[in-house]
Image 1: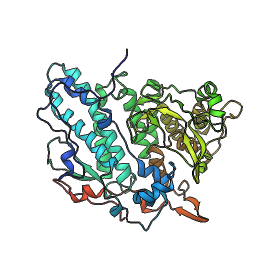
Image 2: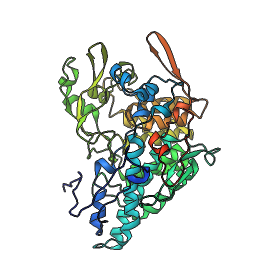
Image 3: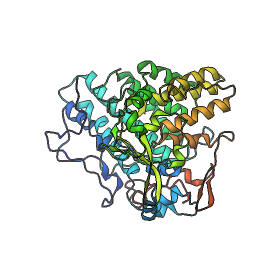
Image 4: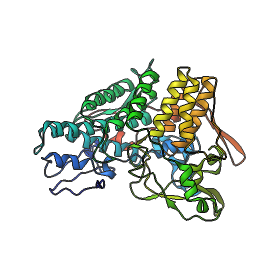
Amino acid sequence: MKTNIFPIKLLFVFVLTLSFTACNDYLDILPKGERIPTTLSDFEALLRDEYGTHRLDASNAINLLNDRYQTIANLNYYPLTKANYMWDENANRIELNNSDETMYYANYASISTCNLIIEHAPTATESTDAERNEVIAYAKVLRAINYFYLVNFYAETYQENNAATKNAVPLITNANIGASYQQLTVKGIYDFILNDMQEALPFLKSESPTPLHPNLGTAYAFYARVYLQMSNYTKALEYANLALAENGQLYDWTTYYSENKTQIETPDSYTTTASPTGHYYIENYYFRHGASSYSSTENPISVERKAKFEDGDARAAARWKVRTVGTETYCVSTTRGFFNAGGITTTEVYLIKAECLARSGKYSEAMNELNKVREKRILSEKYVPLTASTEEKAIEYIRRTKDNELILTIIPFADARRYNTETKYARTLSKVVDGQTISLSPASHMWTMPFPMGAIKNPGNGTIIQNVSK
């Protein structure tokens, strides 16, 4: 059955107002209008707003990793982008982040929509209890996902020994304008995320109306992601297995390469091919846009970054091609369509499972899970199954594949922060710029992003404390 998953114009007069620089209160992003929705279908329609509810702009995290190539023009025009991309530890990113950062406002706008549904859908008309509970469950999962992104961007990464003492992000659960809120600790936000998931889980089904509506597989996959970030490998493995039982499909990129071989292998041909990674990509548990919500090409990557992909990686070869533009040479996108840059896929869950198995000493089983993914990515003439006899080697292989598979998403950034807390896995990033080697330490303050100035200056009915010095 074909489902319309694009934004719907409600038949009643209802305006979602997102207040950005002009707002006197950052909480003004909450949905407001001449009339609150009344029927359950009114509320459910809000979940189909792709631009307002399903968008994640993690640009600064991607810039810090250097996963996206930034042109000289961009670096000269955007000082915050330059500070992160060039690892300028002397830059005052708090002052540079003086515009309304989409990462912050888009996630809180989505939270606002979720809060509205959670508050008012229990009394929605033209529906049964079961139907109302299902829509509320969708909203709780989405709210939890939003808070996961916010806490892993603006606060220090979760560590059991200090999570209860580290400031995190504002927690708002009320849809009223001017509602009071608290800036919880990292542990407080994670506890809230897990509670939302626990309350939602009994009302989710294996199938949902659209890829924007989280189903049972989405919930299990997200649980696995959360527990991995908490370094709870036993629980992460448990939920990874549950998620893969719901959907364990992997897309065969070697077949895609074969079907588009002429275009991919012609060096100077930059005509784009259709990407299979849209809303109904077979690997999707839940689809969420990145910075944009329209059909486009992907961001460019540097020649050095592309070299970090495995030899024979069909997916990488299909996605980017080296091109010189003026005085700059980098890899431009050669696929066009929609990209699940903010959602959850089976590939991520296979790699979560692989890491959890490696952490428990089951290296052969871990490599089996990793190789399931690699078999669908590495061209047959280049493919060799990977083996590992130590945790360190297994993690090295798993992390390489995961960083490459989830490039241009927030997950490699979240993973790097998590690994940076372990001496044996912490990495110092380095690169050569104008003949000089620059680096980023795993202990650098730059791994935590500053709240935008608009939120600090207009905190609403509460107080927001920066979690980073600059």
